[in-house]
Amino acid sequence: MVVGEDRQRYISFIIEGGKTDRKGMINAIRSEFSRDEYEEIEPWLTVFEGDRGIVRCDHKGKERCVEILNEIDIDNGKVKTIITSGTIKKAKKALKDHD
Image (cartoon, rainbow, N blue to C red; front, side, top):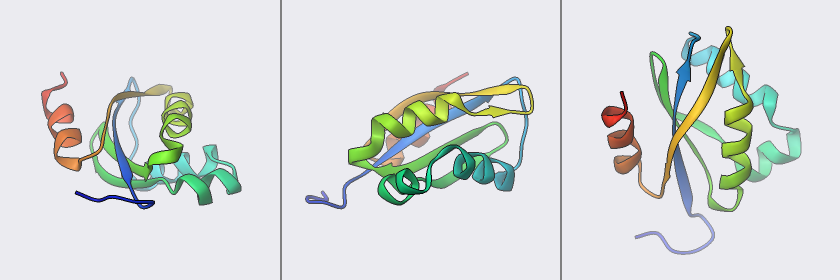
């Protein structure tokens, strides 16, 4: 168990009604965050397959990261967050179970 300042959260999401590749999703995430938010929250696209993915972020910026992800429009589609977890294992399970 990790204790201290470096705790991270994993946010599972799906893209509803749109398509993109990993690079497109990374660019969409970067363009939505202000420079200061990006440096503070440190979002990182950990997993991306088809229309599903997981973003890792700092635990203190979790709520803002979820807000920003839910505002992203991709190719006439919307990003919808599914779950926020402290472990990537649970985040991956949520992606697998969501249909």
